[in-house]
Amino acid sequence: MENVSHRVAAELSPLKGKDFLSSSDFSRDQTLALLELAIQLKNGYRRIDLGNRVLGLIFSKASTRTRVSFQVAMARLGGQTIDLNPQLTQLGRGEPLKDTARVLSSYCDALAIRTFAQQELSDYAYWTSIPVINALTDLEHPCQALADFLTLKESLGSLEGQTLSYIGDGNNVANSLMICGVLLGVNIRISTPKGFEPSSDFIDKARSLAFSNASIEVSNDPFESVQGSNAVYTDVWASMGQEDEQLKRQKAFQGFCLNEELLAAAHKEAIVLHCLPAHRGEEISETVIESKSSRIFQQAENRLHVQQALLATLLGGL
Ligand code: CP
Ligand code: NVA
Image 1 (cartoon, rainbow, N blue to C red):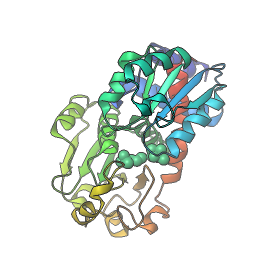
Image 2 (image 1 turned 135 degrees about the vertical axis):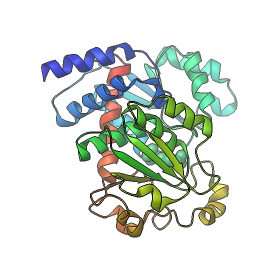
Image 3 (image 1 turned 90 degrees about the vertical axis):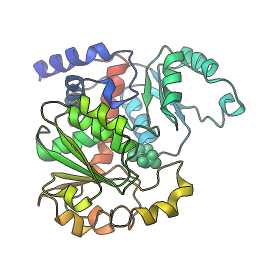
Image 4 (image 1 turned 45 degrees about the vertical axis):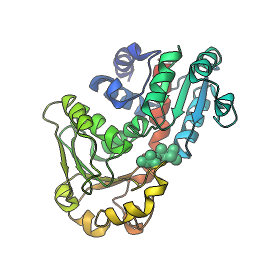
């Protein structure tokens, strides 16, 4: 175990003080080491005390898992979080980001930010001297992807050469899954209705990061996409900020519900993943969420372990 810890620390130590804005910010080896550290923390083989460090949470969108798992992760590391609800700070009254960011970076040791535009996150990273973590933007959800691949690893043993099919909207969750997946050697198949595919620029970027022969395939046929897959993943059809499109999307996404019939077309031992919150009867059926193939609640728990590993890494606790 000591050797493992040394190897993990050697791999992760260059990330001290860095930002985590995208799944592409970490190399394959760093991502694998982070998952290994998360497993050590989860199993109780490692305890890390950061000593009174403070993580500021700037969340412009709702959250249960991300917010609470960051709060608990900091508590377990001997630190704390403060809630910087933008509606209750001067940000809500128009104080410029560049002023807020510089002030907050003299009080906090890191910031976890959930917002709309990825550019806003990059602006925080530019104006602060402390690590900035992407807690979800319209473009990416990289902390989620870490938990997703930890869950896949726990269920399937190894990652390289596995195939994960994502059914639904080509959104933030799909984008981070593509990058993190191919970095780890997982083949990713994305199936969306026409017009809801991830952007071709993003697909190209993800392909350029692929380890070994890991592939990204994009289709509009969910049954074809899940054939022989080891994991089937879905997410809501209308993300936060797209509430006005809910009805239009419900029509466009007919045939893309992850139900028993679709799951039956995957590998017989395929696992089911969903980042949650779920809309039962839309993107996923009640039976599939509650089926023995579902790893959805293990996946939600893993948010805590990967984020504890992430905070320990960025705040230099290794
Ligand atoms: N999966 C996820 O990010 O959940 P929350 O929106 O509850 O944080
Ligand atoms: N795609 C969803 C993920 C929620 C965790 C959203 O952005 O609302």
